[in-house]
Image 1 (cartoon, helix red, strand yellow):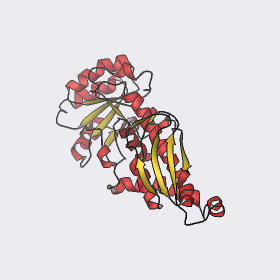
Image 2 (image 1 turned 90 degrees about the horizontal axis):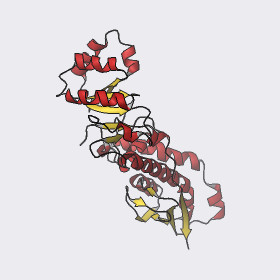
Image 3 (image 1 turned 45 degrees about the vertical axis):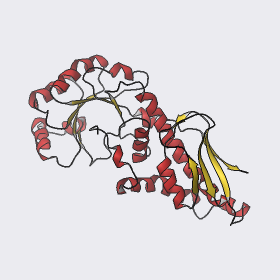
Length: 294
């Protein structure tokens, strides 16, 4: 498993991920339904059974299946057919068929569509970025998310990697940390000694001076899971620094200012990963609709 990917943890069997699904999906439903769906309750009688289809109205990478199933099971709606996470779907494809009380389906409609639209949107944006990278360079999510771990899972469905899941998952020393340190060399050495039960240690490098500092003071990092992040550097700077960092045993990540237009220019020797907040912060929700079948 790639060091900067923890997508295997984003399953409902993991209590932390289930808690995230409850926060972003179940709480959204509770807020939406409030004291009851007055439209459905006044218009329809209980006891009926209906079938409905969820259809995509534009091409996308489908994501959100396990989360949607968890939610629909919870409200008593049965899925009688669906596509799988990661499927590439065309405009007009039915991605899910539902069966149940029409009142329940109507009350849950907006919540399940919001979920599928968001996760499929992030997966689709990720797939567009990831398709531009060679196999030896991984695309990473950042913590710039709207839906937390659900966004991270959508990134993994689209072909990207998760990076950190949360603040306790890995050590990341950024410019603000270093600016608060009276002796950053001493403090970083202490981190390397004391950090336990984390997937990796990462340090943000913004200038040539930062790179030289790391290489001078920590040249023997080959046996340590240390990631060097080249932050907001130009392709020419990355071309210069990435090979020397990799030779010294660091995993090199490029971050900052990366978008769909310029991402190929950062695919340079020595680079192992490229992170971009665009795949989550600028992802558009996919147009998805629910209709009853008669």
